[in-house]
Length: 316
Image (tube, rainbow, N blue to C red; front, side, top):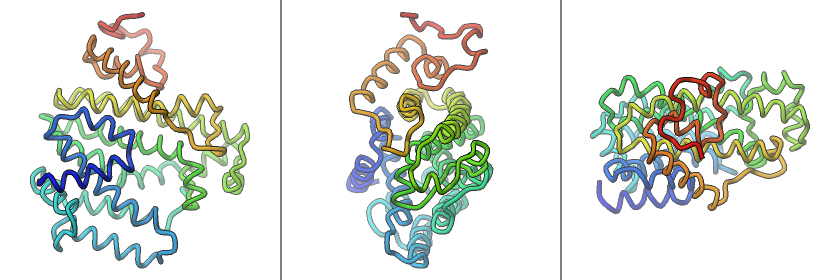
């Protein structure tokens, strides 16, 4: 990849994904540059449907199809990001099937704005968040890719679920989308109309709490696979996990009210998460133990009392 291509991807990531960009800075150069390009490609596709106010659906589909054919090499790439993505695709054997699956998920956003069950939402995430996890695993190139992949998929889903839970207000106002499963809302007596009105209630808080717990189970599964990654990639992925999950602390502190305003992480809070994660990592290179120690995800009871919990991490 040329430096111009890397810089183009980096600029997009820095502008649109500040939390992930912070963790990306700790990746080794061989992975960091590729990550800038991958993230930029994902954002270009995402913005075709997310920033499509006034653009007819058929036109959005045509744009996505043009992007897909460029990404898999059927047509010439348009611009530095697509040129660099083609280099990555060939170098790391990213399959056409994975790219097609990702673009298909973006296409579904044009027509789908509600999800009946979590299974329906998970099917969508298999094309979006999970595809990101698969491609990121490819560029990290772990020795045992088969062992790493299932965890990478779960971690990608965890990140995306945190985004969905954080962005309920924005998704309703700007895109008329609700990603919270209708089955969860119905179980707690929350109507779609209530969310559309941005009407907070204890019932909505209970629905959010249920989905937060489901998401935290995904984090545990995902973080369990960090040990399969190359050593120089483990801390950055752990940092990204801690940073994304930190939104859960903010959401809980507001009693799950994400309808009045979007929960965000201050720069100071991000830096604190970074500092404490690196400090504990210095004492204990077990990703799961450090994540239990520093993240917003509550430890399971068996983790609290299991043998060796915390390793060499100081207790004070």
